[in-house]
Length: 153
Image 1 (cartoon, rainbow, N blue to C red):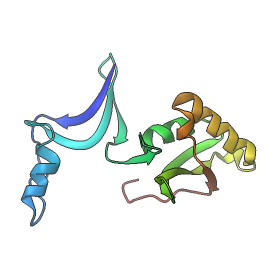
Image 2 (image 1 turned 90 degrees about the horizontal axis):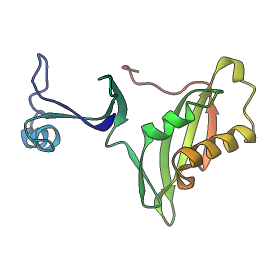
Image 3 (image 1 turned 180 degrees about the vertical axis):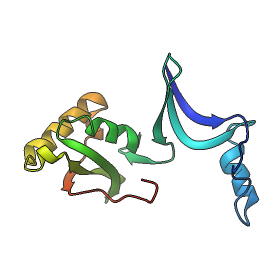
Image 4 (image 1 turned 90 degrees about the vertical axis):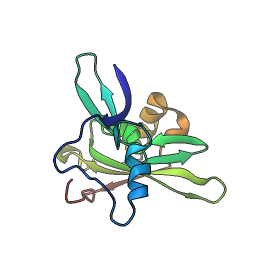
């Protein structure tokens, strides 16, 4: 049971070999962080049985009161709530702290569509406070019908 950066030790067909007009950036981004390996930019968790679970982008972090939080770790906890189908967490500006607040967007399960109240937001804040810390609890929670997706999902 270990977690860390996902790195690939051998090349594969179709692997990127450069960034157009910026080969130096390609080297610095993908090959320099872990010499001898291709750094994917993703975090990974490997179980004692040898199974891998991607934990999200390592560069997708929010700085809350001086604490760096991965959005994927907060979203994973939010998604464990019985009413939540999926979530997206973002940081947003704070006048004093810079990026000091967190905003959670939720899509609810079909059976939970009428469930949203202040109670749900309080339950999510409590869940995150227990699993991570109080500072990680989202300041605002907004329910949406669906979350925007990229073409790859």
